[in-house]
Amino acid sequence: TPPHTHTHTWPTLLKHYSRTKRYNWWEEYRTRHSVGLQVRKIVETFSKRFFAKEQVPVDGFRDIEALDGPCHFIEDELVTILNMDRRKYLTSKYYTRKILYYIRQKDIMEKLKEFLSNPPDMQRLIEGAVLIDQYLDPLAETSLESILRELNDITEEVKRVLRLTNSSHPSIAADRDGDTFIDSLDLQRQALVAMNSVLYKQLKFSGNEDNYLKPVNFYIHQVLREKEGIRIALCVLYSTIGRNLGIRLEPVSFLGYFLLRWCQKPEGSTDFLDYVYIDAFDNGKLYTAKECECLLDQPVATSYYSPTSTKNMLLCMATNLFHRGKENASDESYQLLGNTLDLYVTLTTIDLCLTLTPDDVQYLMLPARLYFQLGINPEKVLDILQRVQVIDPSHHNVGHMIQLTLEQIARKNLMAELQIKHRTNEKHREVAFSVGLIMKHKRYGYDCVICGWDPKCMMEVNWMRNMGVYNLPNGPNQPFYNVLVQDGSCRYAAQENLVYNPAPLEIGHEKVGRYFSEFTGFHYVANVELQMQYPSDLASTSQTVQRVYGCI
Image (tube, rainbow, N blue to C red; front, side, top):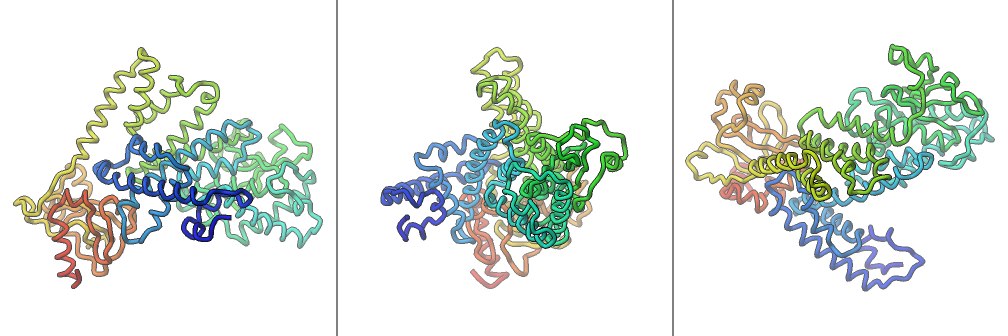
């Protein structure tokens, strides 16, 4: 086993070593230490390089990808940075999260492609759903093993309940995730009754009616934790536990009304009338085929009762989340939109991937067109189009798309150019607050931190009309502040609506580290890049904190 000191220094690395194999621990230590220094050096360059950009471009991660060292050492150093003093090194942590997000997503995408290349009968639905979960939330410590352990615990509880009524029930001895199914319909029914009792009465699982399209209701690890989710997620969990108990339950998309079909013939059947349909969203309620039509209040073609493949189930999950991401213009939604688009492209082109080379123009152009039309990841679009141009210089319309993409990137870069704002400038004499101060909104009561300001409202007229700016006593001709809000939103607030927060607190916003390096307990300290944009604000913030809160 590794030396005692190493297990304390890097405990998360133990899983990468075999207890029966001998290692040169001094060499392992030197490599880990060297990789750690290189990782930190790269992380420290990110704010200077990408502060003015909303997103780190794909080529921004090339330095980290080019590191010569084991991937688990790189990831371990990134996790170590994230676990440093909670109130300090905020900018390093902000970009560390982005790097960790990127390298984990890249690894998960490769695993998803490998999973989808398996024959359909070898694609376990729960495994695919967890890969989707991991890709969309790569910073959550979610693993297939941990999810299966939780489902196995539920399975064991169902078996305990079964023993009370039938100690010889075959589900009790069933192999978890096995391929042997119970023949007796009565015994299957007993197991389902016990499963419904445990899931819905004992553990209180339920369908989430109020926030149906909230992304967390799709994520398997969140559904297990919160005990509620949408239909498709609950179908995944229900069918997996059913399989553990020796019951074959097949997912049916049924025009998006996800159900599980349960055959009433021991020998199986191709007739949809020989099945009962289970609604995992509604306490495991059973429906006949005719009753299913009542759910939609319309006749349904027989093809809709057919089981759907694992790939199509995953595609439905990605599509639903994609549409959720299009609903609003928040940073979280843009991230979700980009991630689900990646998944959608992978799931819809996987068959092409298996027959075409990575340089096939048909394969490359599909994601390029999708990203281009949605205005997402222009740098990625440019990279793909330039690759297509090299492979097929005469390809129709590529040159025009490259020109439009370059113009889009140029517009983004122009918007990202920093304006240096001195408080001593005559135009800024009315600016009362400074970056880093913790504020409270007079009208809405939210807590926030100032990360930027303008001497007057710089938004378009339509925005000002919609937000009631002209109804304010001082209208648009007063300072406006960019603020990061405790609820995770970014807002643009008028000076007359902000007051010093009587009880300064940390603002739990993911972008805090983009602008600030430290939280002192009373205010945030601007990082080097924000100080360059607002050269006088650091001193102003310190003076304000001393005056308002009586501390330095």
